[in-house]
Length: 90
Image (cartoon, rainbow, N blue to C red; front, side):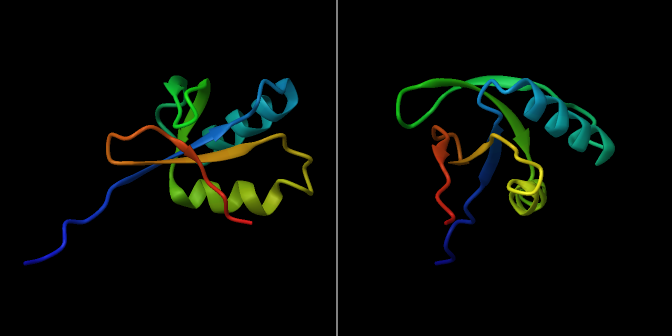
């Protein structure tokens, strides 16, 4: 029997930093995202956060530029309909 394909949703938390929020919003707009909005989510650690929904490629680009641009961001991933959990890639 074939294994069911896992669906992942990716999110970025700008952690309330106004400058980072402006940079991430501009990046998503310039990348052609049709719908750019922060969504309130209860995360796996039971904390409610405002997160941008992004695609995996956005995570790769933002991660590459995090230090250079001094972005105050954390990345989150949710599997299926599960709660987002902090993505530990380091």
